[in-house]
Length: 321
Ligand SMILES: Nc1ncnc2c1ncn2[C@@H]1O[C@H](COP(=O)(O)OP(=O)(O)OP(=O)(O)O)[C@@H](O)[C@H]1O
Ligand SMILES: [Mg+2]
Image (cartoon, rainbow, N blue to C red; front, side, top):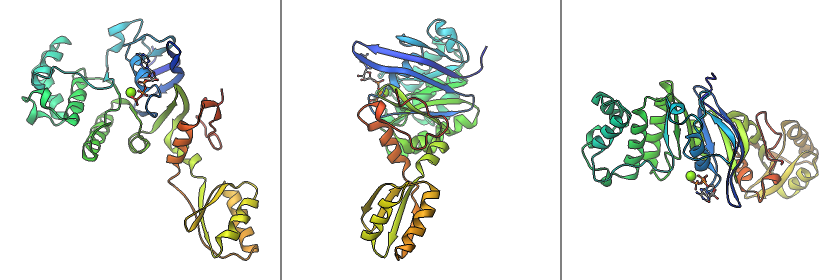
């Protein structure tokens, strides 16, 4: 039996003419905090529903620790917990009562278990309040507490931090980090690159149902770090030099600077060309903040076939069908 937490292969979900999930392959390894990143409607929730065995795939397969959540049902979800969209509770009951009912349903009524989970998400002080009066952030945390009742090795969370205020988002990130540090494997979906960047080591970027990148965030970053900002004594002339330099792409004036994309060897050649043109360089710096640009390019083109990852870092899949 495989001990890989999640292996999705060729996963497809068709709703009439809409292909919500289109041949998704992804692998979550033990200990990963894995980001499933994509804009609204990209297919994240649908893919997570298939992973949790809540809906049937049109094609393809999912294995959680080598088991099939569709074919084997509940048994395959042993050690797996999570929620899609928003966790659901009885609003007219307290958080503690909701949690006790869930624990009983799972065949484990040990009250310590409920208390421990409430403590982990810092809701002990509000546990006797009705869930109907909970804020969105408290409800999300209670959702995680409910998942923790099952003592999971794998946590599947659908946009756990979406809709939270900045403080709530930070608390959610801290909580997820803490769970991961305790040995839990986490797959979480998000539409925020910054959140995934801060929390995750590996990422799958999904767009219109297809994975356009899967791999380490640092590799994605390395491929995105090819933008430069240049400032000279005469930007208008310098722009001409940049545009004439082989290997420089998308050179344009932005405010007091010229921005362009190029690899390091090209930048070395360009600096010589600028000096030969008698231009004084006052700044020539790589731009770190282009991961966001790359994300938008990966997720906002008109069709997946038009997307190109610069220099195709290792781990890139799809995008050219
Ligand atoms: N039950 C359904 N019936 C018909 N279409 C559906 C169904 N569920 C999802 N879809 C469609 O599948 C696509 C993907 O939806 P999904 O909810 O998986 O996206 P998402 O990435 O979770 O988006 P969001 O960030 O808004 O939550 C959308 O076009 C959606 O309309
Ligand atoms: Mg969703």
